[in-house]
Length: 148
Image 1 (cartoon, rainbow, N blue to C red):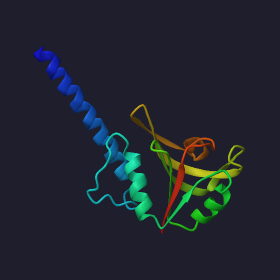
Image 2: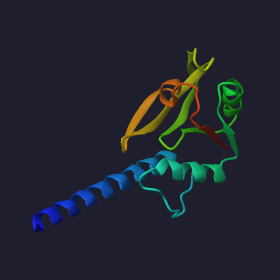
Image 3: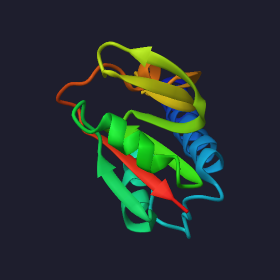
């Protein structure tokens, strides 16, 4: 019985440590752009916390759709940093607007980006054209946060 309890506490400890590490990775990813200021962070879904902070701190926020993608990317070029989130599971920072790949699904040339996708609680780093990170247009909420 004692062994079972010890194993249970170890598993809980490792789980919390992994989630805290996930938050630290994302804090580093957005450092210099989004300020956390000891804000409460949802360790299970840290991208949700980033969404809330970005909404409050961004110079401009745009809901991304297939209809406004071209105009949004054009606007984003005049800002220092462009961060896109998909729901509470994906975050991407545009790294190069000039290096882009045409997307039939989006109907636009999609720039290069770097980001993270959370699947089954695990944070996976991605570096690719944003069309391959944010997925196809659909009903998921996609937000663009622009910072000067």
